[in-house]
Structure formats: structure tokens, C-alpha cells
Amino acid sequence: MSHNKTEVLVGGAVFAAAIGFAVYAAQSTGFSGGGAGYDLHASFRSLEGVSVGTDVRLAGVKIGTVTGMELNTETYRADTTLNVRNEVEIPDDSAIVVASEGLLGGNFVEIVPGGSLFYFAPGDEILDTQGAVSLISLLLKFVSGGDGE
Image 1: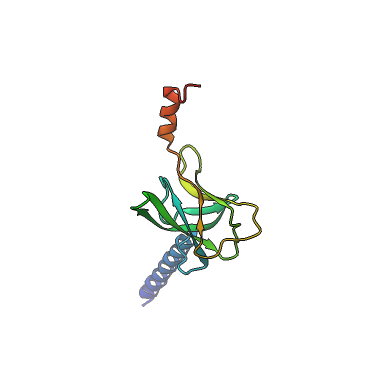
Image 2: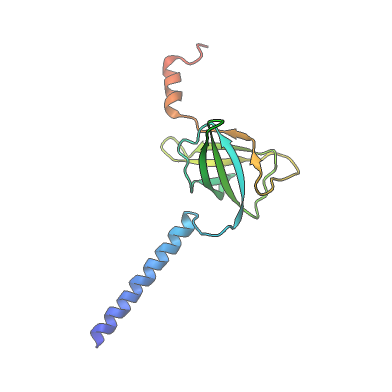
């Protein structure tokens, strides 16, 4: 009987550790489920390196995630939905940029705040966007001499 108690205790500890890892993974990836924020929309020329779940940052701090992306077949741009935490108010003249974490790092979406006294409402669209810059195209431009200056 003591052999079975030991097995049950070890099994319970393993199960508790698995639940702990699952909760940690959900929190660290931003997959906490509910709508603890509001949606904003933006249209980008290029979303290279960005996918659903990518961080949205302001001043280097994660304030939300990318929750949707689809190609607009009329404009040939990537229409994007972002979910931003409720307590973060973003001025309505802010810009949004696809930025890189470094030469070998991944991309993230950065909000560059403006100076307006008015803020985006849920569902608004950020019009000032800058898509991803391809490192390969920049290197090719550099090697070929660029503009010829």
C-alpha cells in the first residue's frame, strides 16, 4: 500500500509541475485568453517577420500583441489587428513601426507616441505606419552603390 501512496504523490507532483509550466508559458507568450485590452487596426506595406502573437511595444515595454493579420486584396497591404492593454492610452497622432531586435533578432511592432491630447478609441486605425525593412535589400543597395551619391 505504501508503494501506491508514493506513486500517487509523485504523480501529483508531476501533474502540478505540468500545470505550472502551462500557466507560465501562457503568461510569457501573452496567451492569457480574455480580452484584457482594446483592439486597434493598422495597414502595413510589409509585415515580414511579424506573426500573430508578436509583441506590441511602447518605449521597449510590451503593451500588447498582434492578434490578426490578413492581406487586403484591394490595396495589397497587410491589414493588422493589435490588442493593447486597457490602461495604456495611445495619442491619436502616434505612428506604428515594424522594428527589429537586432541583426539576428526577431521583429516586433513598436508604437511611437505622438503629442496629441486625444487618444485612439477601441477599433480605431493607426494611419501612420512603416513596414518591415528587408536586410537583404539594404545590403544589395549598399553593395551596388545605392543612389550613386
